[in-house]
Image: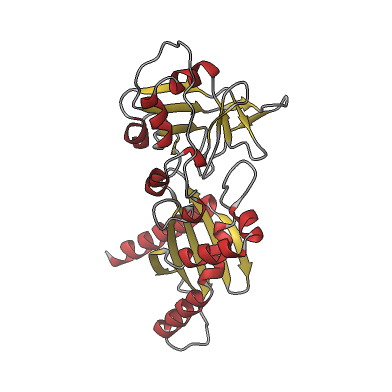
Length: 291
């Protein structure tokens, strides 16, 4: 029985490690260390896997494991900040861009990253390396995006004039497939970001993070990310009677901003109750694919 069980466990661990590596992006490859990261937009988290080779000259595997964990801990802040740097913030910036331009932000994010949740600690199947996995929240009071939350809220102006509308429970935007890139003849797939902007077809700004309630941003971020209409986040954030819109295009250097119909925008901005939905982050975007 044992001869069957042990190989099965090893195969399972190999598959799990391969699956994470395939989905993740390599951010560190140096003697003794390998680090990969993956942004889970649907869950609002970034997952980081750190692999450190054990010292083969150490006589005790328990001591070698402890030494490797201590070495990982000593470099943890550097590894996590490198992983964070890959996260797309908006249509023009990654976290790395912003960290490089703002030393104070770098210090604040470094402190947040040290609070990462250690998910798993285990040895590789051949006992040659220690593998540690961390998860860091993107949103929430201590989320990685928290230093970027605006301190004040800019009002969204109600659009006057008659339009047929009603009170909705949220906004559901389908941005699947390839969409026209505004201002060009290219077709692009929409890409998730911490703070995507919404525009109408006349390129009037409809929503950006400064228009959202700081409390809503701290709770769950600006928008919800989904890969299908049956994703639980759709009903959680957009409710049972959302305004359903099809994205008309994408905009920005990183194709993160979404262009929606002018008629749809009028339906939203004609009633204070619908404007409140935007401010409270009750918007879900369905993407073609999510990491």
